[in-house]
Amino acid sequence: MLNSLNLVRRVPPLFETLLQFLAFIFVACLVSFFLIAVIQDSNIVFAHTAVELIAIFFALSGFMITWFLFDRASPKIHMIGFAFLAVAVFNLSHTLAGIDFFQHISGEYDLANRFRLVVRIVEAIVLLLFSLDITFRSDFIFLS
Image: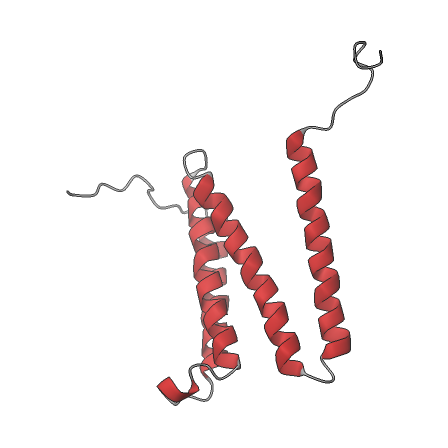
């Protein structure tokens, strides 16, 4: 009978999804702190790789949100979304170089630091372009 009088309010689905996402971020932060505090003393490479994989997951999540909402978003959001993709790719390269995945290929010993530097440069450039209100066209014309 309470429902017929409309006295019980239903939580909007967007708000519910936002709460679930914030809960997931909270749990990911707790896992990251656990990895840094407990496992770092015994195995620094494992802890660093696990935290980097969490960061890559969030960057890919930002890109996928932008990708699925591409028609509804502004060109500024498109730029941020593709920057998330670039950050995820370079951060994955940084993680793989940190565990010596590229060691035999390139012979460079500081390749992980170079990828980390590229990630920070991409982030800085996109934030600068976003703050200066510079956008790129998203209605590219492809010749067929």
